[in-house]
Length: 511
Ligand code: AMP
Ligand code: MG
Image 1 (cartoon, rainbow, N blue to C red):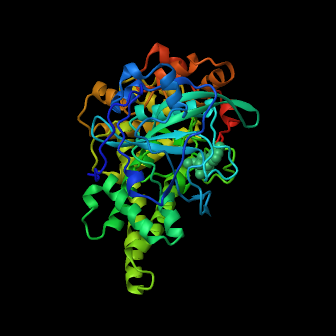
Image 2: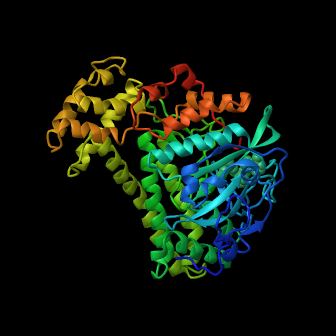
Image 3: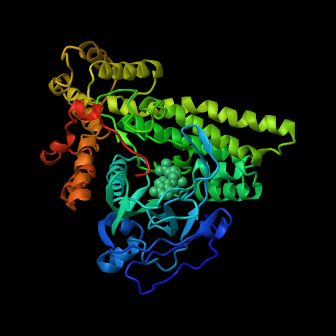
């Protein structure tokens, strides 16, 4: 749907050939700074996602050796790329930062994948940019491989997410609390447009840029809205719809993003920025792992409220496009329109959440919203009261559906505790048509057996970062790619961490 003014670049002799078509660089001048990645001493490819490479039309045979390493470490900018640092602002923990931007990332360009989807190819950890402020622009091996593990787990769980195409070691130390081996991540995204991108140009009163940004965004993500008369509120509604669906998916797998600042919320509805995120172990609505989230602003149960808050910031940024500031009537009308969208978000989210919960409960009928919501809520209350592992609780509920309650009851401190609820659930199941085995299989297809357990992730990253041993990372990744398969190999990855590990587990931003 986007304007194709450039002829994509053809073969160029480089081993890895992206066919770029850089609409962001072309259409949004003034919203970014052209910039080059830093040179690094010793590029070495640590990870390459072959399946994703194929999706992007890359030749598998070319994806090895020194040239591939040089490319994914930023030393050899591929032909046709137009590297640039995107400008954006954002609310961080509720406070507005008027200028954030790509401080250690660069958009290389866009590729139309084999299914015709436009996808950003971007570096993370590619060196300082004019937006780096005090930062070094670099990234370390551990956190970049962490982004691979969590992102691929999310993808395998069917949750919209940016994805890691490659991680290359740089051969350079990055200085954190201690020196760590440096790395670059190559990230693939539906786009890197964020709530914070709109905030930046709204805050500066740069209406021409804001207009261009909105037009670009609509053309890229919601082309059917291009000609609707009230396209800006329609864009807001579309983003709210995607975020409601996304948040419901997060909540139903126990994902805690950890840093839901407005610059980390996408317009596309993909999960982005796997910094301090973590999966919940024992069910606890207040769960928070980020070392800097002292108030629990981004705690598990707060996430839907924060999404709504972030959408309200997007709404504010879109207002200047909907009404001239001196036209009071128009402003009042625009405010009413966006308010309606924001106020509708909780119900939209609740509907998406219940849809997911019903599938996890083995329910297909959707006529009694109040009773099914109560059934789901009471189940969660039970998990909380007995500190039951969220993932295994849901998974073993599928065994109970198949007739074996023992694995589920064994998760409870008091095995009798779920009795009354299970009885109620069975009464509700009586209204369903599916037989027990079919129901159990369906439940197992939406409640994973393997999630990225924090202790397993840390163990894999420590081996990779401290000893250069990628085997634990690769084994864990293989298990995460098949999250619903209950196999002997994956059993070790399904077990919860000891409670003491979870209690003291802390995650970090910007590492
Ligand atoms: P984040 O919360 O990780 O998405 O990052 C917030 C802002 O900090 C963004 O503008 C990043 O580009 C910037 N940033 C994070 N880490 C670094 C770093 N090591 N060097 C420069 N900028 C950074
Ligand atoms: Mg970010």
